[in-house]
View 1 (cartoon, rainbow over the protein chains, first blue to last red):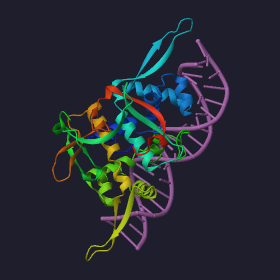
View 2: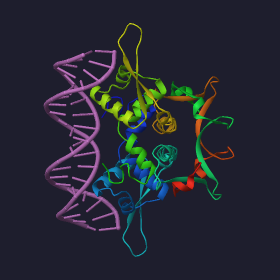
View 3: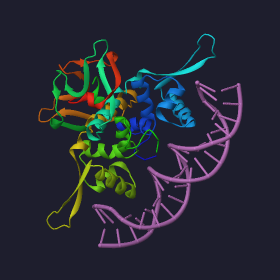
Length: 156
Length: 156
DNA sequence: CAGTATCCCAAGCGATACTG
DNA sequence: CAGTATCGCTTGGGATACTG
């Protein structure tokens, strides 16, 4: 593991990458978030991931609090597990949206697919943007970023 | 490499991860975007990355069109390289912002630091949000995502 | 300073066989 | 179906020595 990574990093991006920065995790989250998959086999077939790796990644995601495992029982069958995103897991929709936007525009493919986010019940399309507190959108060209202690970012 | 990954994936998220989904790339982009680093040594010291890896990653990022290498010459010194983000590289600020928001809120640390985005020249704070075309912000709770062919997402 | 070249190691992945 | 267990291998990463 890189030295600048690790859970102890003072950088919030590095800490995120510590959890999300391997080749399967975000794809599993994507599958749960966009396709609504909850079952082992659904993940397996959608991703083409080896079963041992899937077990390992699901366990990791549960440990990290992004997924919960629920046991449920359908009448007449034996009990099964389902894997459901927690609030922390669902809140990755910003990351998922950002990644898919980038891939769609910067690595476009004629036959590509991406998640389309809409408002529940109304189908109003929604997209990701930088906004001020007044609700004004800000173009990428006029943005500046500076590293700032998190305690100065309270409530944002 | 996972089978569902690769440049040929029809999933825009998977294609993004193909470029960004290793342990160093996004940290290098972060360093360029937030700290404004451009020199080999700056990246090296800020990240603690081994020089061979840095060379390898920089070369990769140039190949992928996220960075350009410029040669410049200061009076009296020999020529040097600087590594500057392209438009495609800068457009990762959405991804960077999303990752840092997640890490800051879901993996909080008392001594953490994150990029604070502001509007150029005005210092107005800016944050990431889902918005409708009317500019209304949409809370995470009322979002729905569905996988959609990219050609239906033209202009968004 | 700005890299390149080597060497070694460990983690991560893929395939596959197996179990309740 | 829903996993667990094993094995071999490849790749990515760390350390370090070296060069213009």
